[in-house]
Image 1 (cartoon, one colour):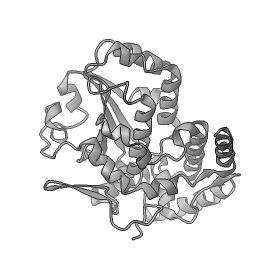
Image 2: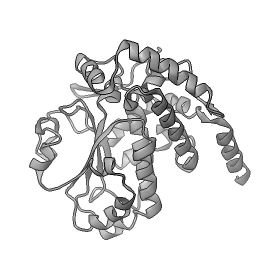
Image 3: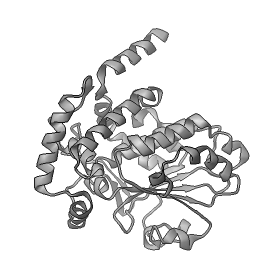
Length: 318
């Protein structure tokens, strides 16, 4: 089966049955609400799409050493949407996206769900099964009392986030509305705080500011103890104003959180009214595993010569 937004063929659309609820990727075309937002916020019209795709294709042909699926319009659109259909901006984003992968090749080399079972087994990383009131995906990271830092590293957490955001990029509705992230830091200890290093902080900030082809609309820090100030001090100096303004600290003030993510869109654990079941990490893993070939295909693109050199270098060390 050929799904327009995917690079690989799939036997069936990826989904997992959870009781009466079906967990799935939403790969259909935009809803009427999505189309309205795309036109009003992203300048997206049929005419703009055609012109921007053609211009972006021409620009990418001129980028030396970069191998991308030039014949795939839907692939182009996933980069054009966060850039409001300005082809030059989308081209620069694509170059930064693949340059980041080269710079952090140890994180991205053969990155696919089947090789990252541990982060899902730990159940500290999840996406809500529902969207928020603005149609955005909600990613939850629990890096406090539920995080066994001796069993799962922050590098594994990063890889899990990459896998989730790559999946989110496949969804037209998420391409338009973007995503919000909730960091639940309840119970963060000093030993856990020491896991955060300046190189890790720089990688995360560079990724979010320059290399994520998705609209990150808000980062919400909740239940953070005072010790979290020590962690945030690593990030603060390298944040640009746009991202800094989207990081909001709520502590235990739920009303503050509800101003940004509606109570009707949050689970009972955060005082919300969503009736859908909590999706366990292993259930997400089961779903992502069905897309393993998609991640293999994603890994085939980029600065081919540099990737080949890095692979050869690694093989020589074996």
